[in-house]
Image 1: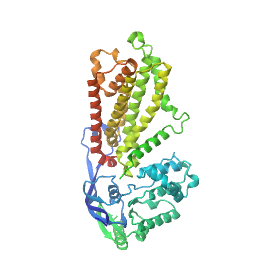
Image 2: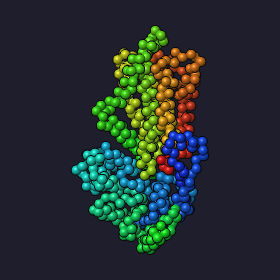
Image 3: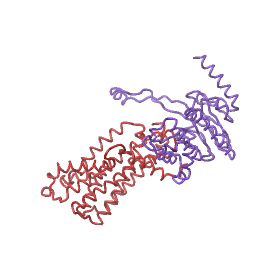
Image 4: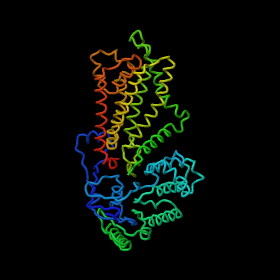
Length: 250
Length: 256
C-alpha cells in the first residue's frame, strides 16, 4: 500500500430509480396506496483497480459507464454498497470547480468561502490569498461581486482556489472542458507541476487528446465495468473501436 | 478529511446571515422588524382581551413579545435546518463536507438572528422599566439552550428526510402555524381549564415558552425534578436526532 495512492477492491454500487414520476394530484393519490416500483441500476459492478502514487490516471468511457459514480465514491460523496476502498493521502474532495460560490459575494469572499469548503483553514487562506489572486489574474476585480464576472473569470478564480487546496490526490471531472485555450494551457502547466510534486491526479475526461498527452495510464469503463487499464494509446484505440461498433449497432 | 469544522460552520452561517437580507433597503433591520410587527399586531388585538383585570397578568405585552421572539427562533431555525441540505445541494452532491456541518450552519444562522432579537427584548425591558430577577435570567438562557437543542435535533432528522420526501416542508409549515396557536403565546396558559394544561405542555416548545414567560415576568418556576426531566427528554431527543442522521447520511447525496 505504501506506493499506492488508491486501492479499490470489488466495489459495487446500485441505484434505485423509481419507475414513474408522479406529476398529478390523482397520480399521487393512486400511487400512495400502491407499492412503488423501482428499477435497480448497477452503476458499478464489482470493480477493482489500483492507482500508484504520483500517477496521472485517466478515466474514459461513454456516458453512463460509471465514471462519475466512481469518482463520487472516491470522494466520499456516495457510499458504496460493498467492496473495499483504501485511500493513502489527503484526497481533494471536489469534483467541480467553484463549489459554494455565491454570485452575490465579492471575489475575495468567494475565495475564502470556497477554500474553507475545500478544507483549508482561514489561517491557511490568509497565507495563500495573494498567490490565489495572482494566479487567477483577477486582482483588479477581486472586490467586485462575481455575478459581474464573465464565466471564464469565474472559472479562473475557482481553479486558482482549487489548486491551492494542497491535496495529495486530486479528483477532476471534466474540469478542462471549461475555459478558453490559454486557460487550459495554464491548467496543464499546473498538472505538470503537480506531477513533479508527486501528486496523484485522477482525471475523468472525454477529451482523448489531453488524456493521451498527460495520462500515465487510462482506465476504460463500460456499463459499470472496467474494460481495460493500460497505456493511453492502446486504451484509446480500444475505446475508438468500441465507439465505431456502437455507432453501427444503432 | 475536514479538520476545520468550526470554521466551515461559521463561514457558512456568516455567509447566509450576510446574504439573507441582501439587496433589501432595510437590510438587517428586517430580522428585528418581522417579529416586532407581529408583536405590535397581536398586542393591539389581544392586550385588551387579556388585560390584568381578566387574567391577573400584569405584563401581558412583555410576555407576548418574549413568546413571539422565541417561537420565531424555533420556527425559523427548524425550517432553515430542514431546508439546509436541499438548499445547499452542491455542497452535498459535488463535494464532500460532513453534512451535519451544513445543517448546523443553517440553524446557527437562525441563532444569530435570534440574538439580534434579544436586543429588542432588552430594549422593552427598559421601556417598561422592568427588571427581571437574576435567577429568572438564568432560567431564560437555560431554556434557550434547550430550544436550540430541540432545533438541532429536529434538523438532523428532518434535513435528510426532506432530501427524499419533499412534502415535508409543506407539512412542517402547516404544523408550525398550528404549534403557534397550540402554544401559550397569545394567550396565557391559565385561561385554559387545568385539565388541559398537561396536554398543552406535552408540546416541548409550548413547555419552553410557558416557563420562559412565568420565569421572567412572575419569577415562578417548575419544580426542579420536572425541569430536570424535561431537559433530559430534550437531550435524549437531540441524541436520537444524531443517531438517525448518522443512519441516513450515507444516502443523502443519492436522494437529493
